[in-house]
Amino acid sequence: MVSSSINDIILKFQLLKDEILLMKQDIKELQENIVKLNNKMGRFYDLIDGVMGDFKKFGVVRA
Image (cartoon, rainbow, N blue to C red; front, side, top):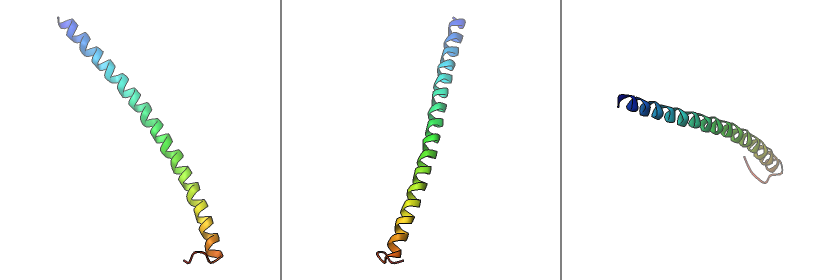
């Protein structure tokens, strides 16, 4: 009886460990995606700055 309960507890801990490992992988992927998005947004803002500079140069937009 006690052995069965201990085995159940061990199994539940193993399942929790597996879930934690999956969550760690998901978090790592999320961090990588955030870095990629940050890089893309940086390039986007650089492009917009260039376009706005051109607009200002031709008097389309006033500073």
